[in-house]
Amino acid sequence: MAEEILDQYGRVTIYKEPSHPSPVYHVDGDVPANPYGNLAALLEDDGLEEVMYNGGAQCVKVAHREHGMCRTNVWVDDDQGIQIAQNIAAFTAVPLGDGPGLVPIFDGRLPDGSRVNGTIPPISPDGPTLTIRKFQEDPLTMINLIKWGTVNLRLAATMWIWIEGLDSRPANFVIAGGTGSGKTTTLNCLGMYIPWHKRLLTVEDTAELQVYHDHWLRMETRRERPDGTAEVDMNDCLKSSLRMRPDRIIVGEVRGSECATLLTAMNTGHDGCFGTVHANTAQETVS
Image (cartoon, rainbow, N blue to C red):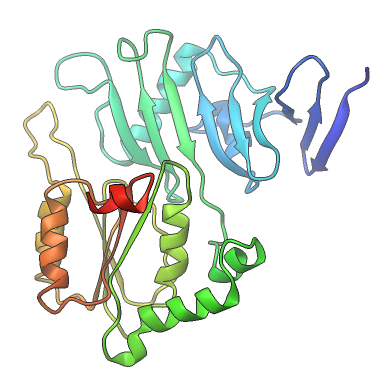
């Protein structure tokens, strides 16, 4: 049986082989020298949602926004993989390595805001790993959610009123869902309803929100480092944000003591706060 071509654009051809359930994402051309090595060819594609490098023994995998999980023709050996991971970790000043004063696992981001998780041996014994959650160049909006059938016009309009608050008293929101269910995407879309004359503060473990807003201050946590640099957690950032005259506060993910701080803020005049929670049901969210 012949290969079935699913899509073609730019340097990319996506095709299906009869012997394997996952499509092949094939990118043509050479990659010039850069901090991301061969992964750079994948990071250029706005059609990709996730880039997954599992060590040099496997080809790089990608999650395509239309074609799902795909294999690629991109390979990165272990030595190059460690170098790429160190380059990315350096963007957020993380001393990646295996030894005194170094850490073998990190969460970081690329200059464009894409979220990165990386590990090196011995944490990942089969080689270095990188998982890169790519952001679209143009952030999704509520119009996209309506077109996809995620929400209808009535719900979108209702949420607009709740969040805008008729310039009187906006509602507080908690967005709950499982991993990869679209919590951050929904948060981004709802955040665009916040009036531009309101001061917006966001607190995240890894800065990944893409809120289109004119008066926006971002805060990001920091892990404790081997050299003794102190940890700054979500609760520290949230408590500090309350002293910055916020009109609206968004907490990227509520999961610890910051939950009590956020609820206290909601009950002391800080209306219009948002947060996300990992939960499978509404019952789990409140329990």
